[in-house]
Image (cartoon, rainbow, N blue to C red; front, top):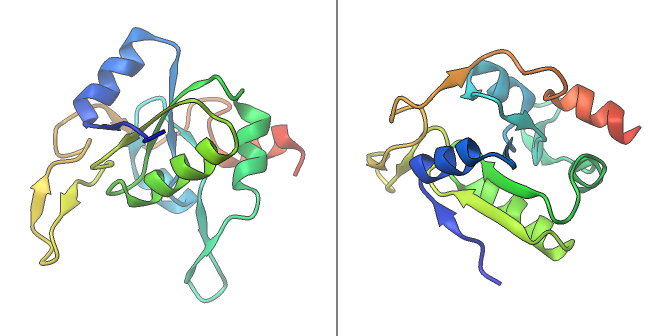
Length: 146
């Protein structure tokens, strides 16, 4: 089953309807800089000791401890690439109600770095720098007892 690719405005509408959760799969430092208001953070990758991005081995376990397979999840990252991969992992694990924000928070860019479609932030949709209670990766990881 293909994962729906939605715009930031479509994502905001799903969130406004209620029952959907925006899962930001960027690293903890990226999430702390700015994220869609009300988002939760479960990184697909972490920066290692050298600053290189490495897969988060606990991604699926934290997601499974935090969300049921029938949860309505909107996945986002900087440009839609990591969140697409996260959605594929979740779909393979049995999650059924997934959508990928195709432009993420930072927008989609071409090979030359030019913006081809604006992201959440460029569209002026609500962002925040503080995590809501229970929305930080640390709190979700503790919930998973990892």
